[in-house]
Length: 227
Image (tube, rainbow, N blue to C red):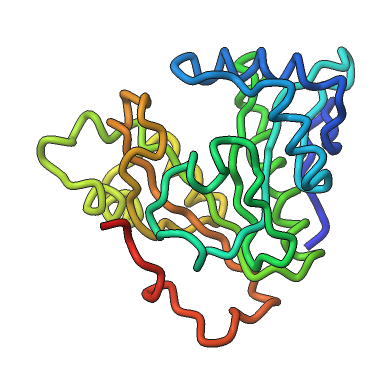
């Protein structure tokens, strides 16, 4: 797995210190109800796992168009439905484990001015190449469910995810992830607590590297949920 589908006029590279202010500004636009990353947090990501922090650059202007931040974990150290702040140590990535079997896609965002160019797919593909090059078993992430608020009084989060997977319903974000080769595993309460459209819910999504066998005695059913 080597080819990254690169849109015209864009390139993908790893994070550098000069990108920090632009990334924080993009976060404020894309996640207006969340606190943007600080320079200290971005520096920690860069220091702990530099090859796992990707940025998309608009070549004609040199502007940062989007970013994808990842870290490595052992999922058995967590609950299956742990929220983002638990999986990222409150956004610091201090729980990054270079011996982990799973690449966790902590964040992926694209500046509104550069959306609909396929950059989300390109950044995802770059991370999957990292999974393959490191011979990791899989990649996981969280998918917002912005269509869920429309049906939340009639359908449970897990049933909603099942209906989106079957094509019975369409979700603006999860449906796109499924088309990009992700599988939805379960629902998470409070993944992004201030996400009104999703009513705080998200889906655990995963992409399995078929070239790498799962860890010995592994079964996702063994990973506990929070009580």
